[in-house]
Image (cartoon, helix red, strand yellow):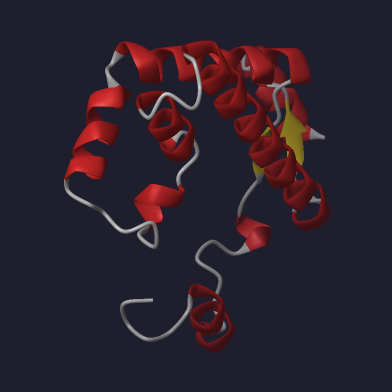
Length: 137
């Protein structure tokens, strides 16, 4: 809200859609649950491999306020707890994975309500002929 106007207010006041729905096919990539959970676990492992812990240590060292959005990101408090000795590594990983799964579920719930007329495609089916078949329907 750097302009003082929320995105919702701007959308209501602008009247025009960025892409008119009659000129587009809207596709939502909806991975199956097993694939989604595997991706979440892999993402958490990558976070630890690229040394996110060092980034969290820098945030702590610089006394970044808990009010800043970065401090509310999934993984920050869990890795802070790991650094402080309140969590072991596996507890931090499990907590990050659980919170990320919950976040993904909220996103899917929102999408089911707001994107009912979109074509929902499992990313596993991203072969061109499958997409064209969905579009042609």
